[in-house]
Image (tube, rainbow over all chains, first blue to last red; front, top):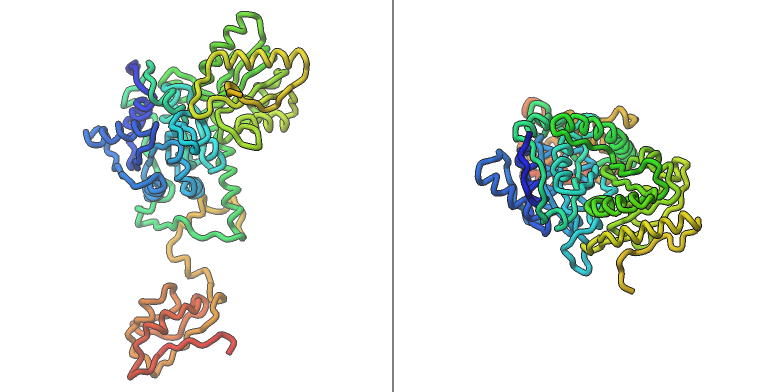
Amino acid sequence: MGKKLAVTGNQAVATAMKQINPDVCAAYPITPQTEIMQRFASFVSDGEVDTELITVESEHSAMSACIGAAAAGGRVMTATSSQGLALMWEMLYIASGMRLPIVMPVVNRALSAPINIHGDHSDSMGARDSGWIQLYSENAQEAYDNVIQAVRIGEHENVRLPVMVCMDGFIISHSIESMEFLPDEVVKEFVGEYKPLYSLLDVDNPVTYGPLVLPDYYMEFKRQQHEAMGNVKEVVLEVAKEFEKVSGRSYGLFEEYRLDDAEVIIVILNSAAGTAKDVVDQYRDKGVKVGLLKPRLFRPFPYKEVAEALSGAKVVAVLDRADSFGGFGPVYMEVASALTTNGARPLMLNRIYGLGGRDFMPEHAETVIEELKRVLDSGKIEKQKDYLGVRE
Amino acid sequence: MKGWRELTIGAIIPEAGNAASYNTGSWRAFRPQWIEENCIQCLFCWIYCPDSAVNVKDGKRGEFDYDHCKGCGICAMECPGKKGKKAIVMVEEGT
């Protein structure tokens, strides 16, 4: 078995990258991601990896460099946060549109303005339609495990899509917790050798990347991307099964926590799910039938499976650490779609929490469960969308 | 027209030199005209042509390939001609 060590989330991810040993990494610093590429740069200078590290002048250039290197046939990674991800915007769509399996840890951080460096999901949730696969991680262990699995998921022949692995800025990226690393050779064998489908450096088989495609063919390529996304769920489960064999840790499309017989359910992802699970336990001890569902794979969203997992619920509260001003939070919108398109119609409420890194405390989870109980008794929802822990 | 299942993923073009099979001549508003008597066979037109619209055989140019000439006029601009007379001139299409 691997070593158990106390590390920061960033250290965990940087170590995963070291063990994956990608061909090319582009690096541009942004809080709270900086530590990942800083540590990785040390691995490069110390000769612990064979990676070509490209230090670039912006995140737009970082993603551009990744796209070029991936088109050239390399296994490629970078990492970013917040404004950095926002600056990559147009290149994100090019990476997915060209079907390049780049892996990118995203350390979730709020978007300006007002400027803020702390953790919320506005950055990656805004990129949910960019054609990237998105995996969310509750803690350092999950972030480490997801990064390793992301390589296999994105590179799978039925997928060939880039992958974001998200974890909460500071709350996970900078706090130290104990986790288990896999031995280097286990990761090396698990990710295997990358075999690019079309490589610009393969001069015997020249190809063109990025041609102009007009209305006569554009939609066909977008339809292909939808198809590839449709294959992701199966690949995620297949890779998770293999990962369990080498790590002993099991992963699914989402985590079901005390969902059996649950009448009221909280849906929440990333680090705050850990806090909420503790509170769920306390209420279970008091006999309240409450459960929790923590999405892991957010893109593609497993609509059918989520609907099945929530089918017994009478009231569902979806908690979002990102807002859609004038709309519901992004996780709520997906859960609502999942339930309505699959015929289940529990009462639903949406609570926005933790924006700009505001702590999600146990009392916030208590507030939600108390409200769920009230709605269960009365059958009435006072406010469909509201905010947790905001001063009036 | 191919369906999405038949196309290479990511709009990647897996064969080289396929511009030859894409006829772009209909884009042209001006047509280059080759005046053979003023041509010194320097092949500047062939070098400068951004497409493949100058046919060359045995080291000598012949007639334009109008299926691929978009009428950009670069060849006419670069043509040194002979004794001050151009070997390529642009004439408006339809005249």
